[in-house]
Length: 160
Image 1 (cartoon, rainbow, N blue to C red):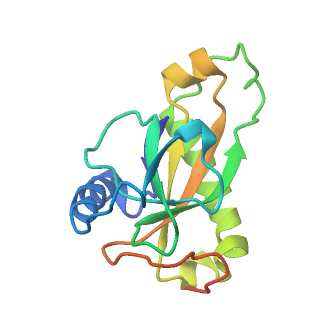
Image 2: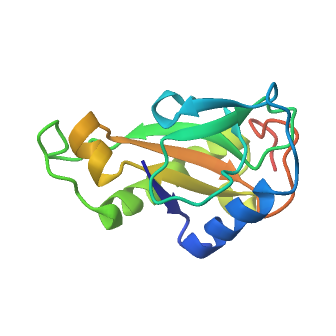
């Protein structure tokens, strides 16, 4: 899956956030476990990866009571016309536009406050060209994220 970010924050901020927050806390191996991006579920809380990659296949999930920087809140299938198994990859721009709308629409339902009134942000993972062609990957994964402070509880219904 390819990494996407809310356009107002930009990909550079997402990369800096992932690198800086990933170094600020240590977790025992019993706290975190590796999960395939394809097995992630809404409500999973995540550590920042130690390195920024173009494609992500595994993510480190922790209990939401442990310090973390992201929480998955929606998985949305890109089901636009022509996105069946044999359809060509629509491109990052098209998928990002879809993700912006789809993740934005689902934010308030999960967090309990309208996105524009929230102290938090959202970002997303997009299907990569490779996972699109090889694995029938059509899912966009939406994450609530913070810009520095670690989260220590689920944001579901938090009204933050």
